[in-house]
Length: 356
Image (cartoon, rainbow, N blue to C red; front, top):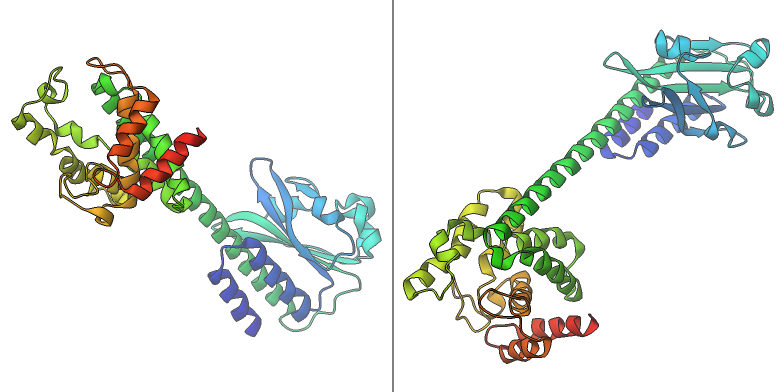
């Protein structure tokens, strides 16, 4: 009972399949006085059983061995889901798939127990003995209980692995959708085609230079790609107007960060990416919009992005003007230090430009 409690604690406390199976093997050898044991894991795509954990062997030969489903002992254990017991390995000789290393290991007796979960075999529990086994009351029952614990551990491992894969695929789908939104915005406003991709890449470089940890990079990337998502709420006659906007039209245009907040805030997945779409038009001196944030009230990612956004806009051709020279853009951006831009963030950006 002590052994089973400890095994159960390990299985429930870790997703490390090797640790769980090693714990079961250790108790198998100590509690049942077994010389060697191992676990084989079913690989459906190759229709084989492959070594995953073991202990008590003199060599590593067993670690490189596999069993083909339908051959030898697997006919009993996997296909018939039955225990396979060989009392005298010497009598089966070379017909036994484990024969190549049986002689070197001096094994005389063998047990193979299928690991069954929900009616399906997901692995094999093998027990090897160098002297005939002496059964005591409950010995075989305990061996079966250990096998059941191993089956549960392997099933948990598969569930966790599949869940991680599904989460990964879901995140990829989300990010692909976000990139699609970003491209759609660029296509709608042909003057800024490619702008979102460029500012995203440069903002990520600047964020790393600023010491922002990698865990936050995904949020910064999503925020940069969606920085103008609020412009979906701006009428075409204003967004695509070829000439200068009137004061009334600017009032509407300046609402796009608020539209971004309204659009993205119900999406929990994008809440950590909200800073750039909502705050990239705020200014260091508090004269920006939509909330008039000042200094470090503005999130760092938005402060970094604001510089990159202006840099890319002035460095790109527009129908109404040619791109500025690099020198002219740098001089202009420097003149905005302490008013529009965070002075420290601006120094980092200029260092980045120098490196490029």
